[in-house]
Image 1 (cartoon, rainbow, N blue to C red):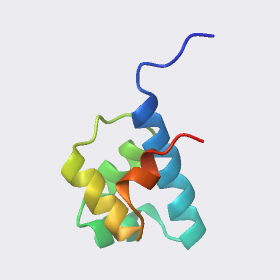
Image 2: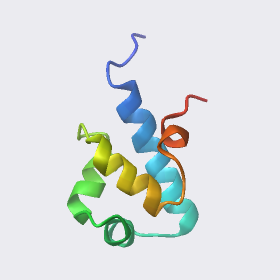
Image 3: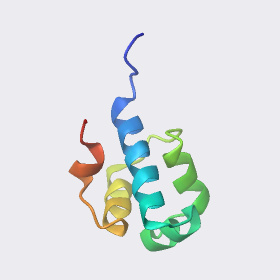
Image 4: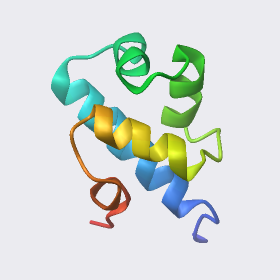
Length: 74
């Protein structure tokens, strides 16, 4: 099995999904907190988007966590 070239994107997406679900938030609720569009949040969560650092920071802040925590390898 070869390594994915988008590992950071996939780690961020997985952390986003996990943290959002832990809080019991819908994608729409998270999008409102982060001041982003719901469809955009969904595409990030599915690792379809190469999300910019500024928007990554908005999401981390909305989830009350750090960007480094969302990118951490387990």
